[in-house]
Length: 151
Image (cartoon, rainbow, N blue to C red):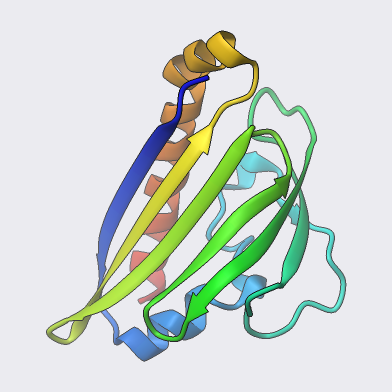
């Protein structure tokens, strides 16, 4: 089974503190996810900020409107620098998503590094080439637009 990595970088016109507050609020996840993903958070009583050990359950419809359960755990948090979420239950054989931010003058660079392994072995490699990589590009293009408008 192949292992893939997707990276996206965005320069955001705000301070590290302000961007950190935004991206570490689980309540903003739906706001930055394309509506066609059918993203809904199932976890009740979400905290205002993420923390290491936080488990969040979602329903998402990533391809062809097929409903998929997804459970992630926030595994690492270093305030105003980075956090990591890892899939515990979901569509991938493996999913590890690093969210990094760093100051650049009066702006902030946000960098995402997603390491993932599609399901279905060799077939998953084909699915990645045909769908997954393009879907990730669409999701992060949408997120960049929303964050640029917000800031």
